[in-house]
Length: 578
Ligand code: ARG
Image (cartoon, rainbow, N blue to C red; front, side, top):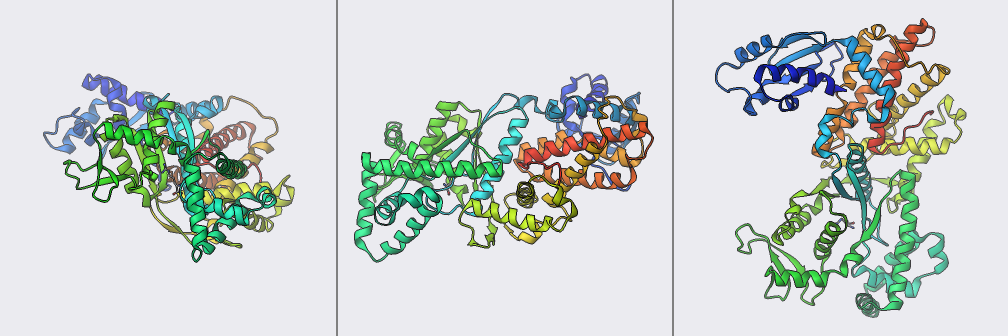
């Protein structure tokens, strides 16, 4: 929607400068609302006109700005042109604003903000997002949870902006630990327990056998043997390994569903393991594989080619490493999916790993490695549940649900819910997500259930509460599916602030997309909820004259759409009642 107004301003600049409208669009942006008074709606950054070479850098900045402002002619859309410190501010016609914005929200709720011209370039691009990627038989720790929700957010955002998104889960399903797990299962495993509670059982076996192996050479010997059999493709061993893997994937699918997350593909280290010998051969053929004194295989990734930095891709016994499998996986994905960009989401301790990975790909003459990105995030401290330290994803979800249910039982409306447990889970999960997305994702933070689940303050509970309240307001206005309304009746301060704020939605999404950071969207939605809360008090629908009620209902309906669209991108399922 903001496009229409940006275009109007760009058209004037185009007339003045004699360049195409398009070149001016990036310099025009909606002004964030201020709660005190109604600010102008848009700003033109004169600095960026200068840095883009559209305006000469000679002369006094203030004079230049004033001169340009005077050449822009106010009309029925642009009502006022105001030279200011950083550039030029514009006030637009608020009747047109109310009419156009709410009409679009009503007619194309899903397209609002995302069918903006800001995303023309990203439309139809194929993006592969790899996230979550837990390890079989090991803990699903807070880092995996963060990867899951951040990766889901990035996938949702890209999909909303018109990208063709492929969601991949790269399981830790290969490596020496499967030797131990196999040996352990042969001693301690139970098919019944595996069926009953697979993740728990595999984890228990793994922990137990690790402990026993410390003082027992024969276990270590068996583990090495089992892994060797796996690597050699022994059918019997592979069958057991495959059972572990299949059962784990099924369990994860069930739990991800509770979180509202899905994947298009479950791949993993095992699959690419098979391709590593070919890869090593290719590296050798390209003259990139060097053998060190210790007998390990390395790739020189130093800028000067002097081995001042290198990546180890082969152990001295000829076997491959984590990074070798990642190189093979990247090559295979490019072949299979022909992505335009690929995004990896893991904690920041793997930054160096991914830097090396991309450098190896570049050394192999794959320029698309420039379009691979690692999104690193910080550590979460102190996430524990009643069962103790977090081991399984399901524990976190159960804890969020039970705590939220307890908080909700204090409220009167809970008894009217059809399925309070389900609502509690959705609200609890949204609280987790918002807490995690509030700051820069690279920052570490300390986890605290009480703070996460607060209903006051900028929490996920507050977003859900505002959404439910808007839904109830809309529900109460029985059947009034009137499409027309009078924009003259939305010219008060509260209404204007909401409209102005929604005007920024596409730019906020664009910023999230450029930086792959959810915090801009979180803070946008929080502000929207605060504006709605104030408007709610001052602009009653019930008891107002029909035309006024109708107009306000449109305004609140529009706000509700933007809120629920934004929440969905964050990975939150909005609830209608709570
Ligand atoms: N399974 C790994 C871990 O838990 C994360 C995998 C990240 N992705 C990758 N392509 N290396 O640490």
